[in-house]
Image (cartoon, rainbow, N blue to C red; front, top):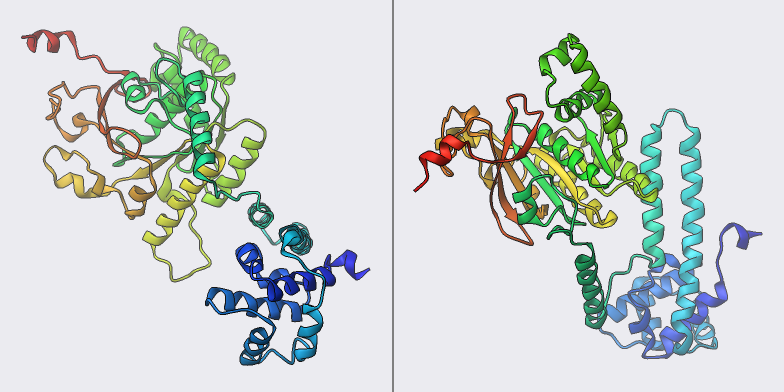
Length: 458
């Protein structure tokens, strides 16, 4: 009955220990695959802990040296003395089957951990004083840990295997390429040219000062990706879902006044356009979560669920500094909290193998600069954001900085938006220009006005 409750095999544990004490090839095979706590019997745990310490210290391992090591640790009597060591070393053992034996031992350890973890989850699930979202986060963490223990996430590959996998990806990119776009399309021609679309596993940080248009820009990206058939998950910590819906409706209706929509004074023609746009947008594969208190762990739990159903090709989080960053470490400062959230976003991008677009605020440093043009150093509260991101894009609108002409491009500032690709780990950096209307509800590729083109024609 005890074996059923706590799966273990004492004889198997002793066979493994015997091989480790009697065969020179044993410890190099298993030192990184077994930890002392994976042994169920306490005495076997102590013997293996001594063996592992000796191996890592480069000491010779045999029956005598193991006895001396246990004696030095004050554990010799606890394991049964020299007689117990001699008895264990006499077990039939061979390193030929050692890796298979280790696999069985690990599985029994995982079963014990699974039983213990699921009992704790069951207790949490029935305790109504515990937030169910926290229980879900604990459930995902338990599954991740168990998967790691089983070795299902072992990423050690030979160069031969790596090259085979790399070439397979090259072939996939060739097959998936549409006019040079191998990832999720951005909705801007020049940005697609620079990035080849949002790439799987990448963390893309989109940063700007308040009121520059981070959310409006992100909604354009989400709609463009969804219109191309990609499933997008949008986590909005700042705006209610219906307000996002208003913006999408205005982007899809060329002749509807934003003021009329806001005030409810729509003309019959505007109402007809809104009704048609509502039906079109309803078909887009976009999921919206506007929960006001959201942590990166909650985003991960939600995105994983969507991904398991085939409904998550890209995640947009608006925005980083509003994330719930409660921590068990009360002495952690704000910069460390933002760094942790940024790191979790990058790990999630790799785990789900999807692009994650993370909106972030810039500090006020750019306000003292001529033209107020933002720079990479303006990322607010944490240099870790820059470190974790595969791409950092800074949004800039010269018109709201009081300029009539953009200083760098010399384009008219009215209706001009600039995406400054300040970091691009796998490609080029540079500026991408886009056009927007006064309400920032409609965006598209930038084409200079005819008057400007004529004046600047040489």
